Picture 1 (cartoon, rainbow, N blue to C red):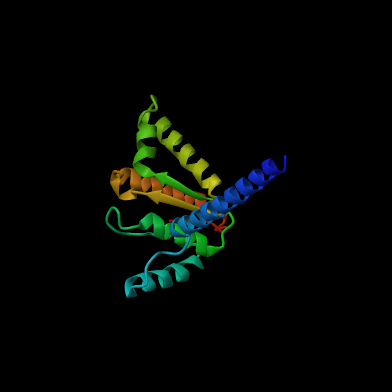
Picture 2 (tube, rainbow, N blue to C red):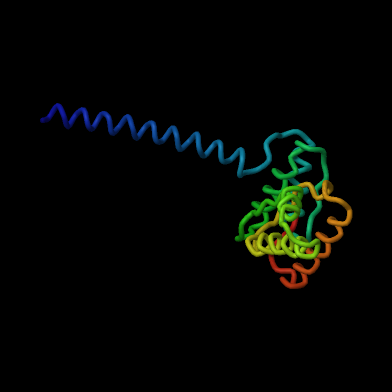
Length: 165
């Protein structure tokens, strides 16, 4: 009996060590994804400074850069630094357009469907951040419609503590 208790105690201790290591690894990985931007070069420090400046504002922010440049990572950093309590909501504009085009209705009905889908994302991002990815891939007509929708949503919200990136 005593031997069995010793084995259980040893195994428990080993599992607790493994759990601590796993928690440390998870914390480290989360800091790389959820935390500050990685690097100590002058451009990264300048980017961190810009993130800190922009995090204080609630106006829409436009991030430019080639694919893979890290716009979403910067948007997450702005959101995390802002102190917003709401969620970070990601919207792929090309996917939104594709969904609205698959709606078998008239053009006006499709526009209302896309507006409804985007409006629901605005609602989810209330008090947080709405990240609109690849707006530039939309046809100009749809970009204008999106801009009008953003402006309507901003007026309806009264400029609350949300950001649109």
